[in-house]
Structures are given as structure tokens and as C-alpha cells.
Length: 253
Image 1: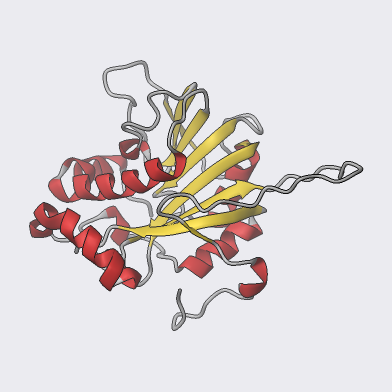
Image 2 (image 1 turned 30 degrees about the horizontal axis):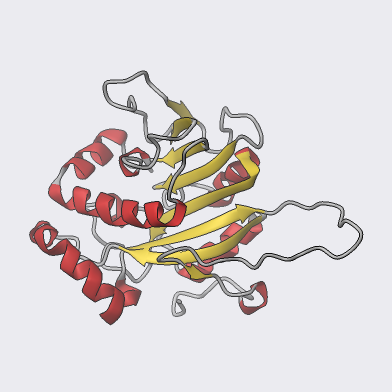
């Protein structure tokens, strides 16, 4: 059962939630940069992470799962948020250039269906960032936060799921190294810097960026090939041949 929208709002209004929002938002902004002129979808409960990101977008829409509930967004402006069944988004095909999905997969009854719907509404050149609770992170068992509910993922499990939805994972990173206690909020920046160097496996959140795979007839003649580029703070995802199976509980990466 999903957490309710009121619980999520309360968490992100508290000091610990503001820390989580800042650390994850920073990674998203570093990956995408300027969204001017793009169509942006926030899925799950991703609206707290859009500050400073969606303001210049041509269109920004938030969709929240029916089991979670919905709140008006943005505050004080014309509402652009709606409630929907996660397996049947009320959106046209191939519309969004960017999709940010947070608190969308962990408590879903069928995360593959969610990803398939994301793929459907993404434009052919679209990109999605999925933020999920890391299985071995400090936050996976923190029931005082939204990250302590539902199904946590390892990086390889998330990658396998993304590929099954016919999306192509290209980059990934970690965030949220501060322990999930209120006293740690004031030192969050120090934890973030030290954790990335000293205990990366214990980050609270995994972020993975994926693109929509499209196929076209290959033109005749020689065509220049542009290599994929690792975005700031994101590492390239290994080639598909290195991911052969879903991890058992004893495995991770």
C-alpha cells in the first residue's frame, strides 16, 4: 500500500525531507541542466524536486498515482497536477522530452508496467531519470521517510527492469549519504561529500538515466557516429552483456 500524499508532503516540509530534496535535486539539475523549451513530466511524488528545474520548461505536468492521492501543484498557481492509474496515464504517446520519476516504482504493484507507460509517453529523443531507494543504503529501513517503504533496488536490478521496458540505461549515480535522522540534517553537506568517497555503497538513493530506444532505416553511405557522453555526476552504465540476470539478495553493485 502506498503512502498517502499528506504523509509525503509532511516529510518534505521537515528538515530531513528538505535535505533529501536538495541532494537529489542537485543530481537531476546536473544531469539535465536547462529544460527551456522542453516538455517535462513529474511522476510519482516528484514535484518537490522540480524547484529550479521546471520553471523554464515549455510544459510541466505532474501525475500522481491514484493509490497515493494528489495535491495541487504548483502552489498558488494554476493547477498542473492530476491523479491517474499508474498503468494507464491519461497522456498522449511520445509527448515528453524529460520524465522525472521519484517514489514511483518502490511501492508499485507492477513497476514494469509503470516503466512501460513512461516509455510510451516519452518522445523519441526523450530522457527519464528514475530515483529509487538503494537496497543497502541507510534509508532503506528508515520508516520515518518515504524511502523506507516498499521495494528497494540495487543498481543492477533497476537496470534489468529498465531494459525490460525497452528503455536504454545510459548513466547512473548515487545520492543522499546522510543518515536518516533529524540531527544529521545540519551536517548533510559534509555527509554527502564524505560519503561519495568513503562509503558509496551506503547511499540512500540510486538515480538512473535512460533514453527511449528508437529504430530507423540506416541511410546509405558513411555516417558519423557520436559517442555517448557521461553527464556530470553520472557514470556510464556498463554494456548490456555484463548484466545477465537479476541479482540475488546477496549480490549488489
